[in-house]
Length: 313
Image 1 (cartoon, rainbow, N blue to C red):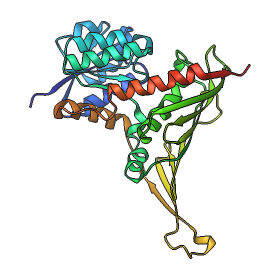
Image 2 (tube, helix red, strand yellow; image 1 turned 90 degrees about the horizontal axis):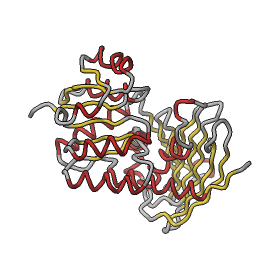
Image 3 (cartoon, rainbow, N blue to C red; image 1 turned 30 degrees about the vertical axis):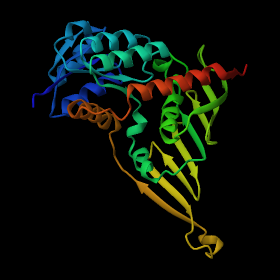
Image 4 (cartoon, helix red, strand yellow; image 1 turned 90 degrees about the vertical axis):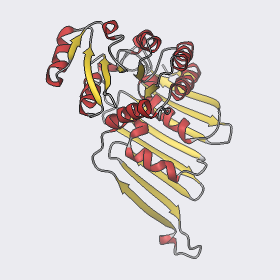
């Protein structure tokens, strides 16, 4: 089978890692990297032995698949150009700035028989993957995603920057439609929302409490999922999953009423796993783990949260 010709559009902080991952996959040929800054493209392309370009349109007809890691406002135009040309696309989250744009990209992908994947990285965290077979009708979810301030990520609110990771994962865990949302947020260091807490209610009764901050003193990414007779505690940074269950023996001593089981996953490369899934979905002609439809659902939920946000002055 011929090598899959790949490229990365936008090789800033995150895009350069995309390029490095493609270069490691035997089934892929990293053809080029593209950045509006020639010196940045050169710096990433040099060690990887690929071409450095400043205009992504020069690649149309020359590649089979691309990662799009440009600022969010540019996602739609770049994605649409490649999808129209029959090129498979992995686009970083959020997939677009509007639902209408997301719908159009999904339509273009179907029309041109392209894979459209969205980069919701936490889905590939080994702790999240290990949780999937343990789930049984979650009733309450509590998540917190805290990060120190980084000026490079302020083109969108903390809802689209950080909270969307947890919202996407929660939507994948709860098999029910979103019923209502409430949110409070505050501007701290930027002109947009920097810290927020949302309460999401689903039609089946499940409730999710979601906190996100990009103005914290420490970094933290944790989630607890409660279901009948069990609580699953995930630490995405430490890559651990701890499950607490009610004892199987109803006559157990109070000290033994809860059974604890911890799984630790050591080093893991979620971005590599995400890109391998994208490549495999192209070769296997199957949907990616995070499809365009899933990306749209996360975007719609975060837009509803944004509209419901009560700003605290």
